[in-house]
Image 1: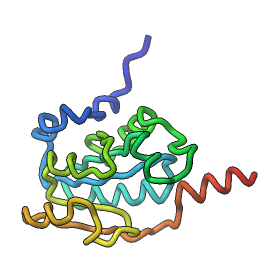
Image 2: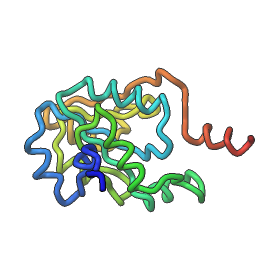
Image 3: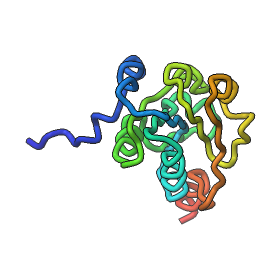
Image 4: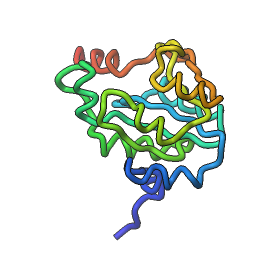
Length: 161
């Protein structure tokens, strides 16, 4: 039998998050999303977000949370456990956790990140947790898309084949 992959240690249940972030270097970057089918746009964005701090936490929408976003009855394509494993395997990610609510505000308040980041389709003032992060003296960033990709467009393309 083979040992569990080392990246699995980066998966952090929400109830362990406060204890686990205590050992991470600061400034701490926080981002979130579905990250259903990881593509070039995602990994470019994540690497750019990570460069804004010394460590990065990614919070994923639970499967139920994704379904409530109205992305389609068949979404997410990949289960939360699969999405967590893929995200945890990326070198730019220090911890990956999840949230079942419609927004990640509870995880943001638990983590108290110095840097809050979302993709270019989010105006900084619309980013959940922006007001709280700014009030603590942190910064909020909306990283412009460098590669125009989307999971929805990718799925549409696959379905047409």
